[in-house]
Image (cartoon, rainbow, N blue to C red; front, side, top):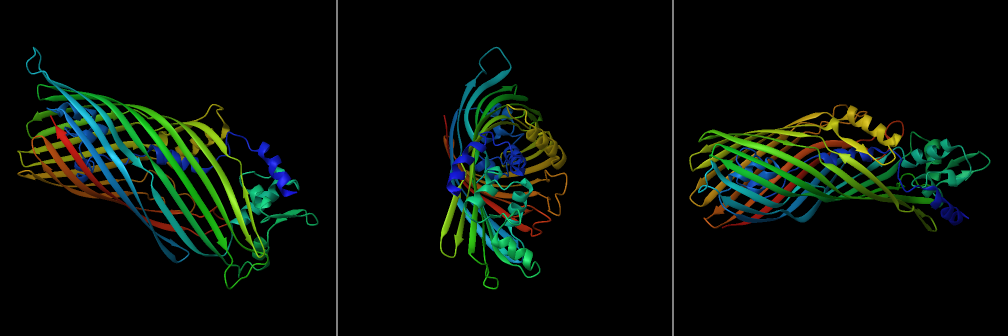
Length: 498
């Protein structure tokens, strides 16, 4: 009988996915954030290159850097990331990590010399290629023994529907648990229940259950740039670029609960609820910048990044598996789809660069972004999207980022170091969660450079802390997971000049 209802519920799940979830707000921030990747030289100096130029990845910060080039160049940067997360959940510590191999940068610059023309323009350059501007590869894992259950949320939501007909339940959530026999309906009491919530209600002070949460994310944003830059009298460098961003993001989240040895639950031993989502899309942005050199040792840079206008397609589905004493039950939702738009906020960057003769460089960048200006939309102008935009304006705020980079040269060997600090994008505290999402990056690298070619290597580590919950917060769950995250990047760059 339950399988007949499974067929009926297919019709009841719309293809627009218009149930408002905090995941859309979280993703709006995640997709709007830049974690500039690129060449090993750029990474090794902490991404601080806005006033220096002459480096392909610097175009992502300030396209005027293209005008600094005096020769054509081909560059390629493979790399690897290693992410580690240490979580503490209900006094239980878990370490989780993961690797990913990628290409962080590839570019080609054509330099046109104008010194023999009747103009003060020294050269005019064209660049094409891509830089990885964000990396989503990550693994988060935490577990502990809790005194409440996710099923309290779903049983309560099922009873709020006020109907004994299970086809009226949410096809992505409560219906799946009913279809997998984890939730059932008591006609006599006129309510939905589960063996687990019965145990909670029977003796809430002594209830306990093992909980495990695993969140795996993959994907990246690669920005393909088409840039123009010029050098006017070795004093003023100007540039502009068109950026086409390709975004791909996938997330798999598993919430597993299992009875403890101290509290055996009748009939059901455990359940595993999983949520899957894949988001793909393209975005368009424009960047403009200038670098002015008032003195030989000093460069002043500035750039504006217009919002990136994304068109995104999402596919999602959920599943649940119930492990019973004598059987295993499984239910899966239909595949849902949703098309929506995302406009990231505008960015403004100011930079100072110092040339220390022929032995070194120093760059300092300041970047301003107001994440409260992030906006979403869809073809329905739905109330859910409107509400999410209101929440974005409340939750997020202006951020300030400082990047500092240093390069020293001894013959053909180059030594680099850099760092980055960015303030939290969160304006408000959500419940008792710590939203102090500050990020700190330290970096370093080496390079070997000759006239016609170069090889660079770099390492960077970004550290931040945050808190999250396994499922709906108070009154259902007061347990908070504290997570310390480290993102480690290794980059190798090969380049040729001609």
